[in-house]
Length: 534
Image (cartoon, rainbow, N blue to C red; front, side, top):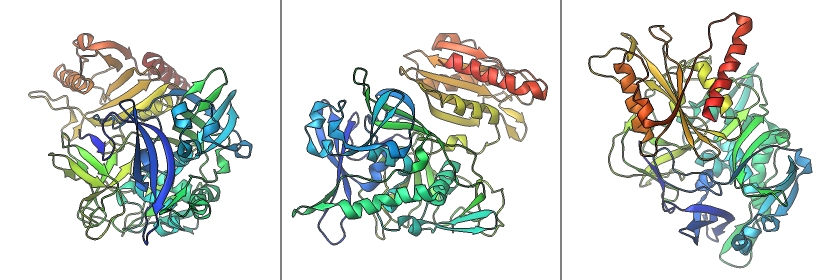
């Protein structure tokens, strides 16, 4: 697995605060964002190009480990948002929970916050963090927010009866590979089709245009500002940050989950991109992925990427965004009629090797590095070759992950490993037997792993296992050994799990039942899984 590192953020640094946006007084200036980091107990000021807004959640510690480029910190709380008209607009410096050394910095203290009452608390929500969670999930979207009519440059929308079509160009629009991820199709549709949400997004540019200040220096400055969409009323928000129990003031560092966002349309929605055709391999706007065990990836937001090179998606931790329904968003491949079906696109890989540098700035002719794009709305591993395996269990896992104090870090579905002279890694000669692995983090920092092996061919029966590993055991190594030994043992959980696992639980599946009893048994299964996780 490749580690994802970020240029200008040394390993172990922690983001303490977001400052002003600024740009130089020159013909083609670029807006940049100031920030403060904790580096070994000392404050360090750093400046980033716009595209890095996607990952700048306050409180994040940039650990640069496999599967964890950064970790979040702070007290975790689940809230229901009150009507937007009840929110106040106040400077961050007035918040009692802001650290004194930050409150003394006028650039930090002057940042704008939404302040409202929820669940008996006074919640201080920085405007930049709310916009980051609502909108900034791809580098091209951040650039669109800072340009007039940025969405019109990236997308065009038209209706055809009860079908909505969304088109995006190959160079300045959404990368084609993002359109293959349902989480991004849903997010783009919500952003484009809800007038209130679109106005909120476009208010970023209006505020920038109207409120930036030039004080005679070589720089123009701007404190981030925008108008929140009124549809946030009643949405459930899960946040992390410091809480003062005496004053009952909660300062939001990072929004972990937004759940219950209202989706604006019941139409079938089809996305069109010039490179979404058959065959896709070799077409413009393609993509590549890191091969297992490949070299590290360093993200550079400043160096211009070469538009002639293929784009790579950078799999970041999933941002929790959930709508109140199941939008019917699909791909319309070029040369095919818009329908509910699309063909699987083969994946290319980047060979292993030394550190690779990828740029998330806008592509340019004569750029020097390969282009990349952030991917943080939906895990590729959960949606790859095997979308029809473990459908019910995946739904249950996502429901459990909505509970306070339980964070879903990974969810992957892959074929069981092959073992010499064993055949149970296949369901038949053409169908691999898959496993599911889900990794959870609990509120106290403990990690739990859920393991399931597909026995739908009824050759064997296996319960679901939930395990935690001893401190000296690498979890990935432990899981690989468990799966290989399960194949060796003709689909039995290996007995050595008792030696490498700090704890493990067996959870039996729902028994077959009549249709009127089935849901009750599934609900009971979910409760058993949740109880063993916590």
